[in-house]
Structure formats: structure tokens, C-alpha cells
Image (cartoon, rainbow, N blue to C red):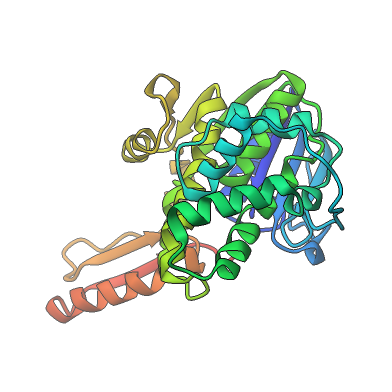
Length: 326
């Protein structure tokens, strides 16, 4: 079987976490061949892999958010458009529930038009104005226009990418990677699998709430946009895997059909840790440990602040952070 893994912001550019899991998966499944479709922020990282790719990886397709969909467009291009297309585009803009079948059919029907052609089209303009007049007339039209444009640019860009042909598209998150997996499934009449190591929508929500670059009155719009991207992956995937039951419940609340869900917990090679020193019997104090990558998304600062409160009440307590710093 040939499997296309879709990775967003991880393998093979980043060490640890999902990337380590991905690398191990490929190495241990020697009976299958793999393509890797990657989505990463900056084209300057092109080819800057942190892993030596296993021999059963037959190709890597690199896509970058800073260039995706930014080709020069033309004003005069006309689009094949139905009334239902405009309705769905407006729903996407305003954060409503999107019929993704209609959205994909629209871009399939207009294959060959560049993302910038769409963003410079009457279709896009009419959808912007319709959404603005219905829900956002209290803010400046110029601000609303550029917010929507920057928000959907990567999505429109990936609607035109050519996905590697495969028997199965395995996305390691929802979001943009999930949409790319859906595109691969549709384009090549293949299967799709989704493994969520963390709940992508919740992670983006936390980032947006704390972001200073998003005006308060647009935060809800951005959050609903990422929720819609996740719903797209949940709708089309044949199976959705999570690592623990609480994550499965959240996934279901966000729109994943329970009949598709499976929980497969990460295994632990116990023998690897048997040689670690153990706490001496009878020794006073509490040892607290965190096995975690030391990166911003893991919020190590909050762990340290929480332990400080513990240490004030239990001076003999010790805190150990175990994991890579990248």
C-alpha cells in the first residue's frame, strides 16, 4: 500500500512530539511505501529536514504558507458560479456551518484559476460585501476585507495544489493538513485516516484568544474558521483516531461522528525506563515529574508557576521536567 502522510508544522522539519511519532511509524511499517506532504510556515526552510528519511519514503511534497496562493492574479477571469456557491462562501466567511461538498465542487469546476484570480473576482467581492452588510457593518470595511482575505488565502491556495497519488491519505491533524488530506481523497478516490495527537481546534483557539495581532471583534471569526476546517476533516475521514478518551469526547463535540472514532493510546516501552534512579524508600519529600517537549505550546511557564505554589506548602517537593527542548 502507498500511504501519503500529511504533516502541518511538524515532520520532517521539527524534532520530537508528532515528528518522532511519524518517523517511527514510517520506519516500523516497512511493508508500505510513503509520500510525505508537508505544510510549513516559511519557504526559507525548504529542504531543511531534521530527519534522515527512511528508504520507504519515495517522495516529499513541500508546501509553504508564506507563498501558498500568492501567485499574481487577473481581474478579468470569470468563474462558473451557482447561487449555492455564494451561500457557502458567505457561510465560511461568517463562521456558519459549511457544506464542504459544495465548496470543493466550486473549486473543481473552476480548476485552472489561480487563488489570486478568485481573490480578485466578483465572486469574492460579492461574498465579502454580503457578509459585511449582514454581520460586520460596525467595523471598517477595509479591515474586514483584509482580515477575510488573509484568513482564507492558504485555504484557497491549497485547493489548487496537486496531491501525491496514494491509496490512503493519513492526516496527522485537522486544520489545513486535514483539508489537504480531503483533497487527496477526492482527487484520487482513495481512503482517508485522521490521527489527532492534540485537538487542533482547541490549540488554535487558545492562540487566537491570546494573540495581539487579532482585533477583539475578529477573534470569534478566526476561531469559527478553524472549527470549520476541522469539521471538513471529520466529515470526510473514514476513521478518526485520538490518543485518550477525553480527546475523543472533545472531537465528538466539535463535529466528529462517533461511529468513526477510535482511541489508540500511545504505548510506553517500559524497559527503556527501568534503569532510571528511583526515589529512596523512606526519603522525605514529593517528587513531581513532567514528561514533555520543552517548547512554548506546552506552556512550561504555567507548570513552573503551579509548582511554585506547591513548593510554598511543601518545601521538600522537587519538580523534574523530562523531554527534548525542540
